Image (tube, rainbow, N blue to C red; front, side):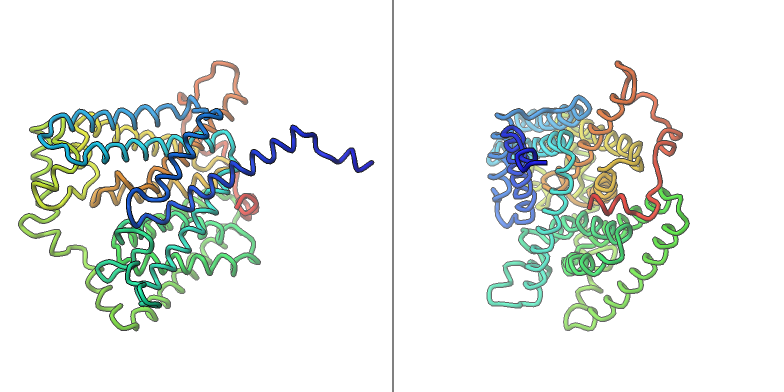
Length: 440
């Protein structure tokens, strides 16, 4: 064939160029999510511009992802209603503007991934790179590796390029789980390449000394391993999962023993490893504030206004459910609770189906469960990565919706009859994990 026959048409070249630009734009946005030292963060400014430009060129919201948009908007309407009850709104409009912006980022990520599923790979790679870099900053800060490195710490704990170690640690869980997935399912030859970034991210989680992040990573890793074990019908692959899990736990124990010998690490670890801290059990500590807060929520169904609770008790709610009740009212609470349950239920139905995007859905799903569980003890309503997780899960839900519409007769309903038989029956085994590693 002649060389001319192999040349792409101008339309094909333009399509490839547009796809490349779109991938690069999304990559940069996700990468910037790991650097939130001050607000508005570069991520916020960039994503506002990116979403505006994307909307101008045709941002499509799938029908299956519409509940995500509706429930998040209703939640923010609850916050606006609560704001009208405040005597001094101060910076409340900005706070709610950030809440609405983050809600729109979830819808944006759900929309772009549902149209271009190849963006999952781009997003996860950008997330891993961002996590590795911010982890290195946090580790360097903890060990005072260079002059001024202490800006990457707080309370003698690693924060990376974040304001709070309790946000920094949980941010690292998803990329850590993703790398663990690749280790368990990918070829042996890639293990050394994956082990180093996983080690850096794990160290970042450890030196954040965030009990929540430790628990999140452990629970998410267990859920991931269990899901892979159940999904595969291959005895060889199941044995590999078991052996690698034992090896990983052994290496983790050895690494912990070595790290705890470092000056100051053992004392901090002993302090942070306690289930209860003084600020939890004090007379007006975290747990006492829960009681007062829920009593206030019963008396104020419309809420008391964003951040008002902190001005009364000196500390914020440190509980996402209480925060929803007080900052966004009962309307916001019901909306967020409905969204959480809907996300977990619908995501579970499609969790193990053999799809190209399934590895990404699985990692995002187990990390989302960890973040919601952690929300019982801390406010997560402005955590950027939580909204990214929502977008990733609902993007997969929309993709499955479209896939089912192509298989079923016209007019078939997506959400109706997906029972457990359908959940397990349409899910092929990973066998030796080659399909997952292909999409990694």
